[in-house]
Amino acid sequence: MADATGRPRLCVVTTGGTIAMARDHAGTARPPSDPIDPFAAVPDVRDKFDLEVVPLFNLDSVNLTPSHWTALAEAVYARRDAGFDGFVVVHGTDTMAYSAAALALALGPGPLPWPVVFTGAQRTADDEAPDGPTNLRDACEVAAGDFGEVLVVFGGEILRGCRAVKRSAVALDGFEMPGAEPLGGLLAGGMWTGMNAVGRRREKEWTGDSFFAGFAEGVATLRVTPGVEPGWFRGLLEGDGRASGLVLETLGAGNVPESAGDAQGKLPGAGEGWVGLIRQATERGVPVVLTGSFAGDAPEGGTGEGGYASGRAALAAGGIAAVGLTAACADVKLRWALAKAQAAGEEGEDVITRVRETMDRVWVGEALT
Image (cartoon, rainbow, N blue to C red; front, side, top):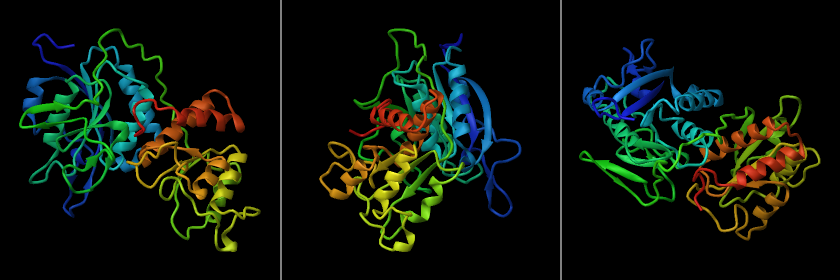
């Protein structure tokens, strides 16, 4: 809802990150005690938009946890009816993909009545050529545009939040969507939009009744590599502090080694290596989500269904296929699925069933299919 001067109203939620950092005398970038105003270098943005800034956190994004995702989602949701035309989230780049995926899932299936746009910077605010001001300007333009989903705007590109990944720690266009083209972009003051972008909801009021911002703790992501022994991770399945869920980043399109190799590293009674680990976890009510090596791959029929015995054995042992998800989104979606199951009071096999149902469904365009 534009203000009296016709300027679009935007809510800007700040969480810290490089865009708000400066380097000390030793050249170390860290969040300052007094956060830097991200708009100080772009006064024209304040002239063009009616901005309400909400300083939520002042953190390096590596220090954000699932509880911060919940707080961020709730901050946006609480302002859903405040008359904003869009939201901008200023965020560090290291975990931006996680937070963007979390917010997309929390807000639920679109189209939303406004875009939620994540942006940040690769260079600190006191750099000789900071990229934050341009990214922030672009993010505000997109937040006022015709979008109805969670987005990442970075380096002149518009990306789906739950599909974005950080591909470089230094490149100014440091994000991409594996296996897909950007939803749009900005160049020389203009904006272009592709066919796959979701436009904002206009036909009726958005109730937000699908909002769910819970994310379980205790999820561990394990990367399967040649020679890595599953027995090394036996502690994740034991005791009161055992993991609530596992994500296995498998080889290829869902394949795992068929034997552990070194008998000393095997789980007790589990002579099938990774397959044995998956089976034990499933029997103990700990869901195991299988992702492929490449986030851009979406093999027909699901992870592990490409015809290889090693992949099919993982599924037969109880593994849950996560087809076409980025590594960040697979972690976030499992946490979200577990929290939904826990909120329903489910245990054991019921948790596995509910998590499987949630992981199998594409909620917000998170899977490349």
